View 1 (spheres, rainbow, N blue to C red):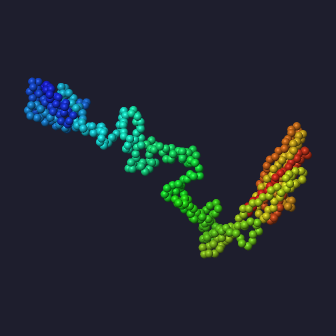
View 2: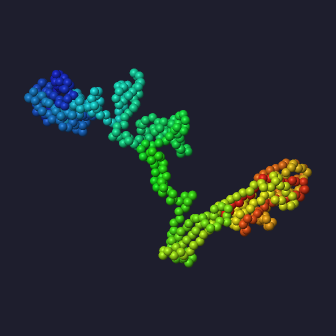
View 3: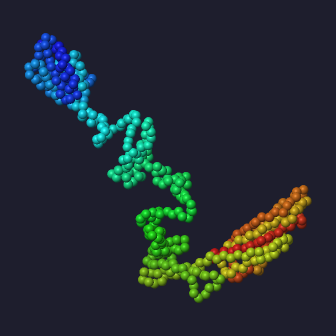
Length: 447
């Protein structure tokens, strides 16, 4: 049978509104004639927004009937929300939407109260002005309309606390941290374009020092060669003197089966020693030699050899008059003596003035040749150098000077042999003067 529900009496509805913010809701059901409607506890249900029955039905609600006057109490409202009454699956349109639930739980979850410790989670948007005390972990500056907060603290449990390199690129960090390797730019900064770290120092430049606390070193180094001390700085270890370098070479022997074709045994030790002969030195400088020895594993010397190590150079300069003029004969410009038998690198230099004087009205080709000969007048073919010029009538030529040089190899068979730098001219015009000035000869004994 279809039930007809009329309405709440006024004071009952008022009571429901007063207590609706809590977890229980009192209800009284009467007929249109005022007769209490009893036995309906099992048919009383509620929905939440948007109130689609039964998808939005509020669960966990218990309804108890109190007495026989149509009074009921619905308990178990937890969520802070508006509910509507349904009776036997029929929406009671006379029942206004009522706010139920525990308002204190809602406030604690969604709002921060002053004077207590609260945890704020999620993204929050704020409007208006904030006020903060000038002490504590937050400081502020500003006016009554605008405040700027700064100086956040990094707690020691944060991974950033002891390693600022973990800070993200858009992280909050102290001033100048990303500007110049955590130092003020006026003192030190890194230039990426030339990969250098620059230091500026106020006052006297010599007073600026770079140091590192503790035993840490300022740069990477090979501990076998160097050691670092906070008291004495960088130190050279003795082991470095046993290493190969430009000044010395450590020679290590090895077994080489290919040497059997040379008549030596495969199993042997080889040594290479640099030393100075004791008995005789025909050279005007130390005659160091390399000595090679091959010894079998039984101690028998199977072969030995030696060769002289020389790196000697000498030079003569302008031993003749200041100017030597080229004519149809060979004329000496400079002299040098090669002290020992051996191969030499020879370099001669001179200043060539061609033409020597201003000249005009000449139509000819003139040339000059230089060479080196020994004291027996035997020339060195590799030493020749020739310079020539074309002269034309109607053109005026002025004095010109330029530096010339030539390098060649010479084998000197007899110790103490003299060599001469000579000049000769081929002057077809008979009007041109050619001069050689400031000649010099340098030799390097190569073996």
